[in-house]
Length: 420
Image 1 (cartoon, rainbow, N blue to C red):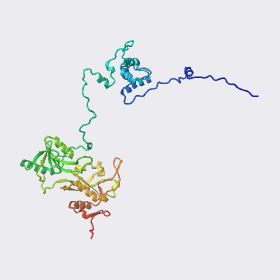
Image 2 (tube, rainbow, N blue to C red; image 1 turned 60 degrees about the vertical axis):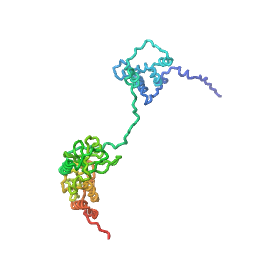
Image 3 (cartoon, rainbow, N blue to C red; image 1 turned 30 degrees about the vertical axis):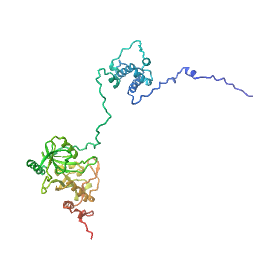
């Protein structure tokens, strides 16, 4: 037996039927779509703050509120509502209908004045100011009527210059000033006799090692110049300057020349091609010293019998080693001065470099743990007999160092074999 089942005809339902039924679960409570204010639109971003306040708190900001931010937003909203142009510009961002200015916009477009009942009280002018444009538009007395500056038009832009050096030049007492007194005495005598003269400084004169000058009323002398510095469009190097008042400083060449030009009395001593110091008068250029360490570090135990540091200083050795126990250059330990060599008429810094280069294979090659726990490798300490250092200095000074070489096995200087 066959049973037939008949289903009731399904009643057709359209969208109107769906939306007309009660929404007990609130599924159709959809928040109005908000248009995000563009990052560069200041007006829209200001209105967005008002909208966010309404969205979070569920009511408009009140002027009578205790919170300053709410009062500020209330004034801002009122200013928007009384400005038809701003209302029109902000309409697309008003998802909650906060502005309520549609009638004002339509009326303004038609040229018809619309009076709302009850007539709102005109807000304080200060509450209508929401941007710089409002300030400039309300200039009844033309106080702000001036030509706009050409902010983005560049005139006479200089070439990019190197940043200010980390080391700022400062004068300090010259500990060996007695060496330079004869130089200043000579210049003063020549100025009195007329054999030398002062020429108002200009960049064409330039400055060289051995020149004397007047800066800020004080005579100075260019004792030496370091290596040319990279990164500058024109020549620049750090100069060692000695001043007649017993001070010294290391100043950049460009800083000195610019300072002489700016100084109304800035001058260069012109000496008619004569050497500032007679050829038979030695010019002191610094000290090369040799030190031994008093460190008790066990890492240095096997080297201490022949371990020496070779260094250079413009001042005194005592001043240089004053804080040896805190300086990794001196192995963070007291040192003993073994010997010093005073250099004349030569670049003492280059002498130090030549000594280091000749002794290079005998450089101390170890890692030491410092007082603060950080490790470092000494650069100016050599495991070599003292007599070897003395011979290297002697041969460099007399110009015969090219005839010798270092025996890296014994650590001694030996004469090169000439090819027959």
